[in-house]
Image (cartoon, rainbow, N blue to C red; front, side, top):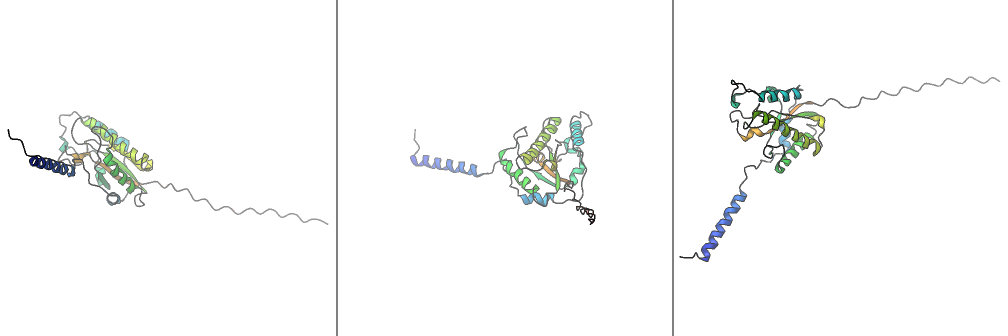
Length: 228
């Protein structure tokens, strides 16, 4: 049996090393396009008027619809959006990665959340309130998807408040599961897992009322003249 030459082994080893380096240089499936603070501001800074959103009622509505067992229920690609008014709001779609079937944000996505926080604290967006909307692609049980999307929206809100110190009164969260797919034509596409940040309205004026000017001090009565 012929033994391979030392040079042949060396060439094979070099090719293997080059192949490994090439694989390491390739972007992974979860690589994200870095966003900037200005990207977020450009999408959200379009306030026109306040939008009334009953977040608690919307959560309940999503939960109830996700439990539908009707035989006439349309497939995911044909379901009407559960909250069409949300599609009219200034919105930033964030590709935030979570651990599988959990609301745990993966470390690589903390930069994305940080850029969102940076945008929300800029002067152009500081006067406004926002809604964080969670979504899930159409896989698994619908009712579980609504619950998971709510937990993920809550997780982003908690990070913005606790880590990046955004005032809680500026943020609300709701999970719509697969009840309002971002890409209805592709219900199972990863794009349907994105989290949306929506500008809802202006903060109520919390400036303290102006203090009235102090009243002029009352004049003391003149002392009566002394009699001699």
